[in-house]
Image (spheres, rainbow, N blue to C red):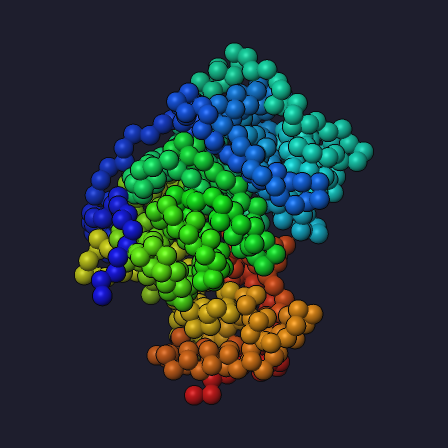
Length: 616
């Protein structure tokens, strides 16, 4: 039976390859990058004049009891006028790249408007991970952000951030709040910024911005080191949006509508998706949900009401949506009514999730929605590589976007992919040593990502992911362990009960795995809601399931490098404070291994309770 997909055009399907020095090849799209605007604000201004009443941003109004009500909309005309007023307020304060605006907020209307005001004024903004303020107990990463960028203004959404501000923000830095205050400290209001009348200085400031103007600083998630401030210029952002438009023509084929939770302090949500909406004059419905047990219901509610034209999420989000669509007729009908493309990033998407999504789609609309993906990073804008056809499999990445060259460099048993193009950052702010180390002698950014061919006989199909070079290791026997592919196998074998797997065994005799379970494991256990996660993970049904997983993996193994010889289940979730989890929800292998070193040793010493080993 032939598989029918909802039609989707792929912008790049062929590449040009050339050989370099031994062990080096270069790869580019077979088409040139078309002209793009010098500033993202040019696109905002365009839409404000050509579609002034079109909704740009929308977010549900939060009621006094904390529940969420109807949507509040901001049109392009309103966004442009308010951004100009905010720009005037920033100009009046003499803010600049040496004294930028730090934003402490989840995605919100105020966050979006302040970002646009900064862009108009030519003042960089620094969207900062909310957990640095709201979850962290020591505020070390927030302090690091503030030390690195030396802000002239700190904006916070509400009083939840007051404690973090009091502990970290110097008295010489102006604090602006959308709501609430900071006890014992003078605070300006966001409304005051919005009501500052825009004058001729605003036009002059915007005219003075150009491709090399710094738009924002985005901090990397950090692993065992503190995060670095990635310089995002207007050239990086605008060229990357044009690259996306050429690789994904669907973005311009109808008015763009996104329903999106991805955080704006991360490049996927803040550059890729927010920038996409401004570039194409789309509408972004801010989703206050998240792929967690406590908040996923809000995402599902929004998707029952608002039909996106394209939809982006991380694997955990798609897993929850796939499960809900099996029984939720309204969700299935609305979400699939006009969506042209799904896109996942951040981690591996298990095959059972793909199968469930496809089954619901074929049941509802008689065809499949293409699930696309690619590869990128904060330093590449982020969009860099995108698939070439609808028959995508887990791990597929595709080919480079127009205007960006890939350098494929043999590194031991792996091939590292490196980037060069207008969408690549010029470096890290106030970190010349780290900047120099990040680029090779030809100016290619060294990603640390390993790739291999989808089909060696057909380079036009492109590349697939082969793990992170820094994550790979050798056993005590000298056998090389490729972490990325093995993680994918474990997640697939344990679905739907494996959130992620951390691979152990550096300098040990055997490979081990530590498993972060999904919330679904609670139902598998048969225990009530009052049971702790530790009790759930010791339930006979849970242990039996994972014993079967270990046995299956052992039967599939071809040698010690991919044979999981021991496995344990983790009741303690990954923490943001220790850098074990990134803002987009993916697990940082190196950080987990560093902070749980005693557990790793116990796993391999056979002193870890409930260790599971193959019985086949």
